[in-house]
Length: 327
Image 1 (cartoon, rainbow, N blue to C red):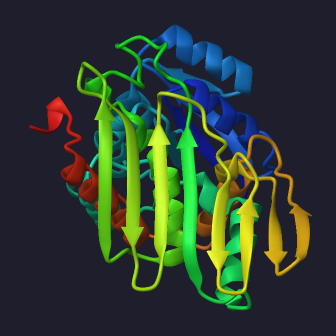
Image 2 (tube, rainbow, N blue to C red):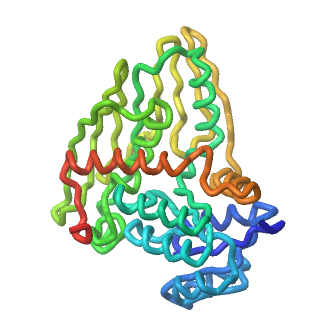
């Protein structure tokens, strides 16, 4: 790998804008190319972030030979096909979460990465957040005892958006679960492992989009209570209760700037402010993997992505969440 890693941005929307702003903070990163179905949009984005190349099709960027890795930031339903096309052209891929809509898609993506001998990772940025890393380290030491209860939620009001929006359009894999429910599910999985049983219930929009989902993960000696929704805001604080103490990850926990530790009557707060928009740590980890010729992340592996989508598939099967393009 060269001294600077050349990035291509696929789908220059809001999330790509935040990600690209953080790429500019990384000394060994270079935003080299941008692709959109609109050349005007690609050119404007490229000019704003200093990219040399703009393309009016994703294939054109994949085939251009201008980049080492692409960041895929399109709506969920395009992730699989675009990732596989990029990898078929020898490109490494960081694909924004969720990697795919279901297990079959993610499995196909992983197989493509192995077949083409390239790096592939699901862009679950919270895994690399300094607070999340510190809390996991603290819990893994065992000084707080065993986790007996975890609560995490993620909700925002999205009902004022049009039915053609990413949030409410079934053809774009709409709903709360894949978009934001993935975060509470991830936290329970990261800290507590794969549950023995999952209970879940959902509420639906008139057009069939899932707009609220409550989940209960059963473990041998613990429970995780999780929620995602588009019908209201929520506090978005995560609580992890252990036999010898409690951890509270401050709102908004998925992009946390610190946590509070409570042991008996002693309460201590730890501030861990993030750089930029919070993508810096994920980017640095991807660069570490590329510079060391790793084809998957040791912190968020292919198996981790498969486990996560398997959990979401189970919840979807339980609650009846489906998309027309899957049939």
